[in-house]
Each structure stands twice: as C-alpha cells, then as structure tokens.
Length: 285
Length: 309
Image 1 (cartoon, each protein chain N blue to C red):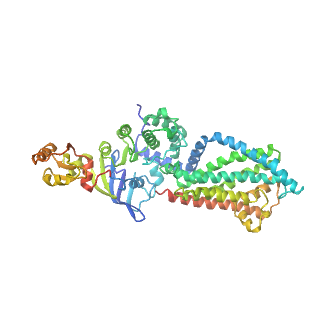
Image 2: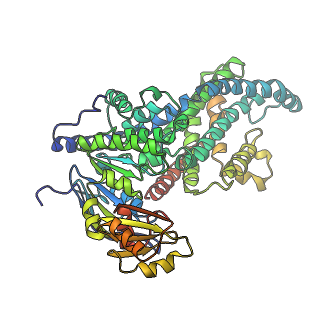
Image 3: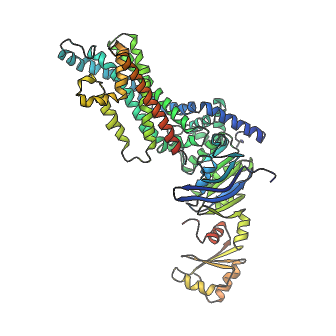
C-alpha cells in the first residue's frame, strides 16, 4: 500500500495552491464543465454517429425525392418561397433538427443534472460557479449539435440540392439557434423540482408546434394570419428565414434580417440570465 | 489560541422558511483534528456541513473556514476542501477513473496532475482494478470509497464526510474506517457527521452532540462518557409488560435508571454489583447484560431519546 498523493510541504504553500487553483477555475471553470459534457458524450458516440449520419440523408432524400416532386408538380413550375421546394426546405431541416436536439439536451440533461446524474451537485463542491455550469453545459450542447449540422450540409451537397458553399452558413445559424433555444429551456428545466411528466411539455407543446408553424415546410405567409404570430415569436422561424437568405438569397429586407439576428440573440441573452439566476438559487442548498 | 482554528462558528443559524435547522451553534475545529457532529437524523448536522462546505448561505452568526468567510469566499474555500456528501453524486455517465479525472479538472488542476492523482487515489481507495468499471456496477462501499477518492483529488486540508458509512454493511464500514484512519495519520483534518455512536468513538478526537439544531454537549468521546454517564451499564429485561413494575422496585440501585420500552438500563460504576442487588430483591430478569457506557448512553441522558429511532 503506497502512500497516496504526497501532501504539499507547508500549509502556506497549500493555501497558495488552493487559491491559485480557484483563480484558474474562476477563469476556466466553464471549460471544465464543457469537458465533462464531451467526456459523457463519448459513451453515446456510437449511436450518435449512426443517427447523426443517417437521419440527414434520410430526411433530405425522403423529402427531396418524394414530397418535393409532388410539391413542385402542384406548383406547376412556380417556386416556393423563391426557390425550388427542396432548396426552400433544406434550411428548415438543418435548423429544425438543431432545435430539437438543443431542446432535448436542455430539458432532460439539465433536469437530470440535478436529479438523475447529479453533475451540478458534484460541481457545486468545487470552485466552479453556477454561471460557469450554465455556460459549460450549453457549450456541450453546441458541440453535440455541430457534427449533425455539418452532416446535413454534406447531405445537401451530396444529394444535389445545391452545390453552393453558401450552405455552410447554415452551421453558424444552427449554433445561434441552439443558444436561443437551449438557454431559455435550461432555465425552465432547472426550475423544475420534480418530474411529474411536465418535461414532455417542451417536446410536445413547444418543439413540435414550432416545427409545424414556423414556416418550415411551407412559407409562413401561407398560414392564416391568426396563426402567423407563432412564427414571429418562434426562434426557429427567425433562424430558418435567415438560413434561406443565406443559402439561396431568398428576398428578405434588411430590417427583417436584423430583426432575425436580434430575436435570436435576445432569446439567448434572456435565457442565459434566467438560467444563471435559477442555477444560483437552486444550488444554494 | 495558539493554533488558529481551521473552522470556526459563532452563533451559526440556518433557517428554511419557518423551520430552524441550525439554531445558534458555536464550535472551533483545529488543524489535524478529527471532529464529529453526533446526533439523530434531522438534528441539523447535514445543514451545518453544507454551510461549512460553502454551498449554503447561512441565515445568521459567523462562520470562517480556513480563515475565510463562507458567504464571501465560496470558491476559495471550496478549492481547499474535500467533500463526501451523504448521497453519492458520482457521475454515472463516466467510468470510475474518469470520475476522478473530471472532478479534479473542476479544481483547475492541469491534466497531467489529474491523471497521476487519479491513479494514486484509486490505489488508496483500493479500486485500481475497478478503474474502468461503470459506477452503477460498483458496490455501495466501493462507491463510497470512490467518492472519498474524488474528494481527495484537490489534496484538501479538510475532508468533510456527511454520514460516511450510512447504508454500508459492517465489513464495508471497517474498510472505510481504515482508509479514514490513514488520512488522519497523514494530518488531514476530518470533519464528519454520524448517527452511529461506534463510528464517532472510532474516528473522532472530539465531538459535539447535536439535537434540534443545538449543541447539547462537547468533548472527546471518553470525556463525554465520563461526564454524562456511569462507567458501566447493566441492561435487564423483564418482559415488556413487567419492565415498568420492576423499575419501581429497582429504583435506588446504581446511579440512575432509564426505562425503555423493551429494557431497563441501570447506570452504575459496577454493573455486576447492581445485578447482584437486583437479584437480592428477588427479581430475576429474563436477560441481563453488563457493558461499558457508550455515546449512545450519553445521548440518551442528554436528550431523553435514543440515536436511532
């Protein structure tokens, strides 16, 4: 039985080491949290590569060779939202999938981080601050969404939707959307003390309606005006409209482009502030 | 005081709404000491530990850990403490060794240091063969040892253990106590809560008895026993319906009697002599046992209740 880690020589030295470490964590704690997320993801990496590779191709191919043909026929040669239907649809597929992943990670992962796999309670005993937990966790979500977004872009190229390098713009837009969705959902999930089935609410009553009413599969203007407001408040619509402009130059006035960015940044900022507040309160035990 | 206390509390109070969990307690814990909070569940021990570990804001009084105020210097204090919480907070998404590595990183330690310490501490915790095991596949005792190893990743000056052996079988408890002894020998300050008197006797140089958020006694286990109990205790059983009646006849034998539902405790310097005296009154208990006084007796004396209810 060898002695464990040699104790530092003097108390003063130990105190100095502790304070230096706390200082380092004050600067980099968010990254240590992200490291935990990335490590935890490794255990699922097999499944994700499978799903992450397969689903973009399935969606683009399925909708492209099925639905797009029907829609384009019905349109009688007229485009949808200023483009071929599949081109119109592509940003919605990339961004819709990013939103769903972000929402899921931030509901079950965050709630679970206090209950099922209490990573936040463990971090609480270290110098890592609640704000750093929120930031680091969200970086983990970005890391998770990023490869899927890249594969979607590849699918768009490979399946011939477009060859333009403008498709790459969808990746940063997806990441901005992740922030706009993940942070508010994180705040909400961290606020839930017990799981009484309400975690599903995000999936069923937020994510799904947003997928359907955010001008994703058809232009928002097609909806009756009474339902269009859903799109206006939906981060997905703002991101998708931005994505269409970036991908094929859909006509979007400058003021609206600015609004899209402002809304997404606004969601992210308010979400961040709220999440940090909730984490702080919940972690004062 | 020559050596400044590592942890020092004055009039420490914690309230949750209307409920007062900790009700104005004072204590000083010195460097290298092994200090215990002994009391029943709900006495306020865990709440006190959370305040010491700078994760819970106190409602009143003062609390300094390593010379720093816990309300103002949370990160600096936490950087130098090891914490073993009552409920395991191990990361079940990671393997055993990864738990140590990831946790060490939270303390701002370089990767190389974290890797080396993880191996050393796995060995210390006797978990080297379990390095790549899933947390869920470890036994209760192994999880506890892994949690202790994790709490040592930052080479803490003070290790806080909240109910370290609750829920473990006797063998696992002894292995754990042995590890804690080694830490104590190395000069780590141990602060623990427990509702097991044998654990308190084994591990604590000094302890406070806590009840309803207050400290009711303080001292070394031996001193507490000397002060609040007799040298020996005679336990006699007359059958549940007859204990009360027998107690009336026994009154006067020994220093003091304690009538519990299932037995009578006769506190006496000489337990055998007390038993003789009872028999001399033509009373024959169904069973009798003479033992040394323990902290359990101290607690019973001070609060009128047993520790484990």
